[in-house]
Image (cartoon, rainbow over all chains, first blue to last red; front, side):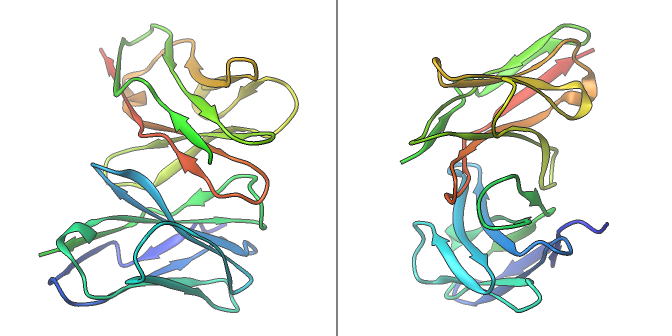
Length: 113
Length: 112
């Protein structure tokens, strides 16, 4: 059974640009969450989607947005990139809403220059 | 608001010795508790979870954790450490229909 797939694995963008990251959950999983990991702040929750609806949102500016498609695949978008957005972005999927354990992808390493 | 504390930034242990990585939590209601491990440039790998039932939870790679409700702790343990266990370990807490909140992580270094 395939795991959580995140694309791309690495990305370099220029300040002011926008970026879209993709996450394909485990087959049958309907909940997808996104986390930002930085050395200074650790793992911070961005948002969670279930059945194409955003269920929870973390404390991030509106430049960070996401969506989920009918096949449960999810994308997150960051507009007007800042240097501080450089991070490892992790996607996690779970079978259902509620928390019985998430499976994480390998992440997308975003570097903003 | 829920929170997790991992009081040690780093734990050093010799190969073959027992290891403990500490975690305490704060949450309203019944906690769901998790341990994840992260190797360099990789995502988080699930080790074990406590949802309900037996307080001693056994997980992957010989790891186990004990849920202690009175001390609000969920320490990760392994009887005999391996050099390959060296990695970053995260404790996380959630509750029904809430998100996962992670601790800051503890770097485990196992020396040969």
